[in-house]
Length: 473
Image (tube, rainbow, N blue to C red; front, side):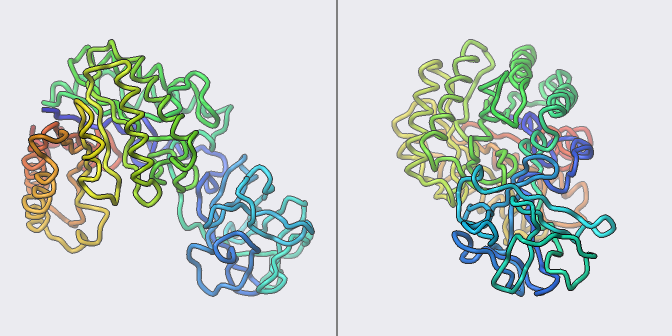
């Protein structure tokens, strides 16, 4: 049975790296995917993409939500494309003056600059592709024909109050934020220090027998991955396999980030929070090529135990038909090189727990991966310690039992953590919570993997939890 820990940090995301990694990024407020809202100082209304996109931009919304939110695509520290809710990009219409969002091609949309007032960084002007500044002439007319040379007063239609709604902190944000001159050294420093050989020794001596390593699709193109990613990740993955072999650990190679993002989360290296994977055949075939590359490269390494074809595809953006076809192609790619390695199929977030059984029925050595957290849902907000533990022993146990069958695929709880919504819990209560999860998830027929080995938040770090006596294996 697999008793594993995830090596979050092989792929960058919030919590999986030293917080200081972001400190030196130039203009770090404006990284890819940052969500911004702009309120006109003259109309006192928010800029909005009418109908969510596909037509003109107005300044007539009293409150801000999705249509009033703009996502950055960073070109450099001062220049950006801006994307609206329906995925069109801001630009100017045929007159070269009126602001619209009508194109899905960022390369033809135009480049914008956001200029902040020196002593009030939330007060901004937006320079348009024609060199003039945007202004809200009326609630229904936003144009790019201001000189932007006023005194930043509330009566200046080119002045907007900016609110940063959300930031992303993933590998795309780091590498594109630092740019091609700085990013290679930044990433090398991270790879050299975050997870090292001694960590594999710790894992092996702590009662664990495997590691689940999250990787990005671009590693298969190393040493010249597509921009903004930088070369070097493959040699560190090679090291991980060598260390795993040295310390007799099994490796579950997990494709955590697919081209275009399969779930919109920063840990899938999304650029702006959108789900683009599977919407074109090229994104699927690029992913199959990555799986085949990894399967071929590590087939002779005795530590290769399983290949996970993709992590956490989201049902809101990935159809079951698309995922089924990909799983069939990915399975064949692994089998061309490795007849015995397990192939792991991750359930869709928001999908039915048994929806992958039909595709798995025609495969050998196949595993269904489910992730169980007592988090990320309103039902956990008011649960106390005893209710959380009881939920594990009843609901979670029943869910796992329902998909663990004698004639079906193996089951794998590929992610879980000793964290909850309970505030002020004692060490003894955390210990009981850990013990309950180990007991329930230990019934998975393939095994389990804790998220993760290291994390800036103590309970998310299995290393910290073991060293401080919160988890006993």
